[in-house]
Length: 120
Image 1 (cartoon, rainbow, N blue to C red):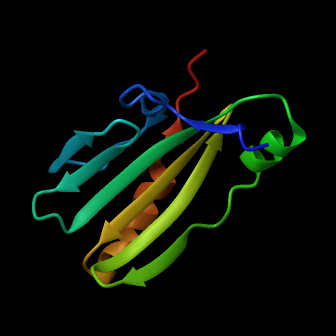
Image 2 (tube, rainbow, N blue to C red; image 1 turned 90 degrees about the vertical axis):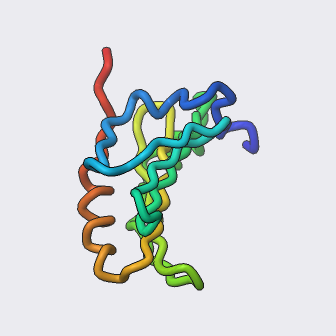
């Protein structure tokens, strides 16, 4: 069961299958197993990671189809909007950190705009 989810080891792999557009003014940081978008004053930081689901288990299928409502958590640096999106064989994990509480609406709208590209 613990081998169902694997992070991709190649830089940015998996992210390319998602339509992500935070808008102008963001720089991209590609890490080993994640990607970040940071605006000019770092008041908005978007983090993505893709978990690949392997196997043909009922547990894997269930995990993919039970997207949870995003949650908002306040911390010392502001607010975090945390959500997941599922597609065939993968789960996209997203955390949007904002310094201004008013930007949470932007975070919700941005997260709603992220879509899986149906590359066939």
